[in-house]
Image 1: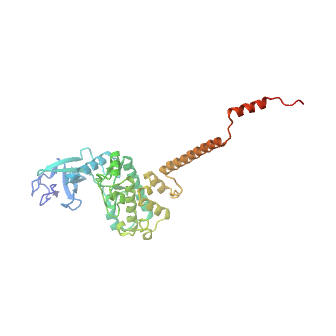
Image 2: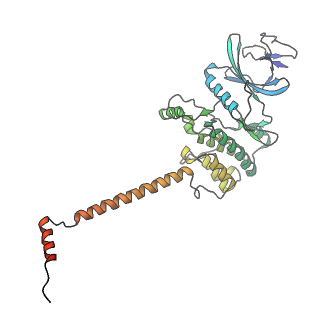
Image 3: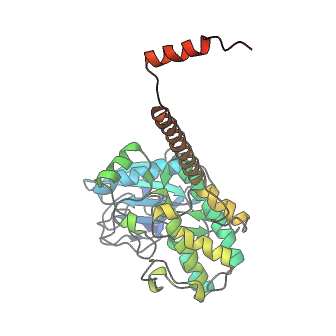
Length: 355
């Protein structure tokens, strides 16, 4: 079976052996090497992209097709991210994996990438049910390691959720769908400060408030990852779990059985404000490997700097205050004019009475 790449084709299924689509005459062999086998999700005219399983001279790969030209910058950002990052948890893209086609006067952008064998965690959860704490710790560690690699390149994902996590047969996790990746640049932060021209990516139940408002930061990935783990532990979508009206925190611990330190870690990842969440992936991994390393017993690097700055400011204030007190004391001491000084000198130089 061959599938036609033309999104406007009325009958896209074709039997094997044909060189062109029987319906629209579009070539079925793309770039002289790729043949579409089947759609990996049901094609929808309203969706901006389509995803297919393709055969590359006998090797199974994935082809992502962009239909909406307005999203070309996001698509090209995904291409650059996947081509530059080399990690077993990220689909690999060959240098010639990105190309454009013109079909019936319409330009289509294509990205061919490694096919991650396995199942996404959304489907896995529906089949197997909630996970235990040991599995949660293993999976969280893998995903934090992957995000740490991504953040080290000054990038953040912005769409962490179960359907974008793939479990390989080996037990290794991978992240997919890097179309929403955003670079951390001075321009980005300037736009955030001015609240201008920032594409908001929203997945209900996973996306933090700052990202909904177009002000995502790397800690936004930690929020979504924490909620993904709660989804896996409870079997309930985060949007279906209640929230504390006072703190805004998710109420979930009564739906599963985990140790206090691990529950606290996930709660910290899902804190309402980015500054309340772990500073970076290294902090998260340290708390995962050392459960005794609670937030109250450990000052994060940024907190250490702030503490030292406050101590320095306090010492400076004490020094200035001490100098001011000395100056006041000097002003309060009685002073002698010239005549008084001469009198004192004369008295001290006068010989005393004879013995």
